[in-house]
Length: 362
Image (cartoon, rainbow, N blue to C red; front, top):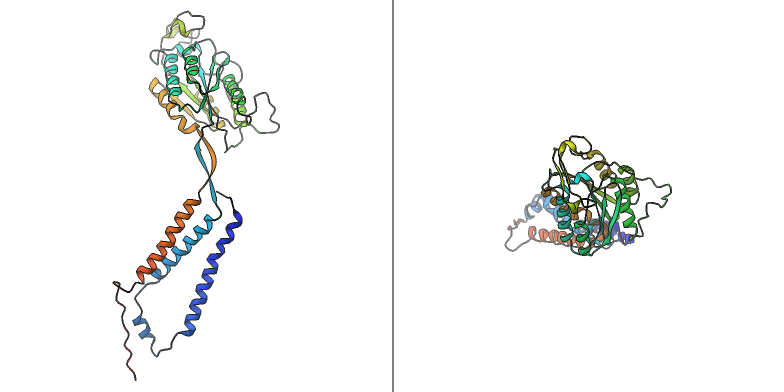
């Protein structure tokens, strides 16, 4: 929490001044008090109030004044608030293993359907970019609010050989750098900055990587994540698919070159015998290094849920929000509570009847 007017803290001096005044008033009242012959008679004449009944109203009143004095300083709190200036870069794996049918009808079809749903669910103010990667990474759509262009690009995704996760992250960073002057491109020397150091204030732009395998080409994903972390960009990673053997089936419009791909599980990857396994360790390390999260989605429904929940996490930015009104509200309630209790416990009409002391003259 920070203060806009820290000099206004001098208003807190009202609390000790009131305490000094109360002490002086009590002392003066004792000096002018009448002397009587029996202290027991005075006690009998006073209402039976305990110590806490006398102190609680004073404590509430002074605490309320303390809150009101604090409100004068215009306190601010750093909160995570929705951002309308954020950019989300979707990096989608289009390697050959996306033809696996362990997710019906195949992984690529399920992934494109979930990506379409994600784009259509946005409010139109958030910029979204699209990167497709196999053995290389390509920026298909720069960050834009044009949902028709994004949907058309998603529908045109085709598979190819290789998986370049690290290169996809670097390509996404450069796409963000084109529209955000606070994010240097990957070729810019950042000096002595330590990549991956602790960051609390991230850029509103975020990278989402969806893959079903492990990096096999180009730069290592962790190395690319260090570049993202040094630029305060979060990377959320999604591991898609299962490790169960399944046929590889893609339609002509899903294969680069237009030929139909159909292989049995024993023939995938040149005799591997199983679908390519997700490198969860690397994906988790990428997410942790950049302040993001790793998600696992084994079917189309889980993938849709993950993408649907992402905006609540990635569309936030830190902002100093003034909370003066809360201090005023709390202070006012405490002051009136203290005054109310004091009047209630000291009321005469309808309240506890005071005991009268009868003094018999000698």
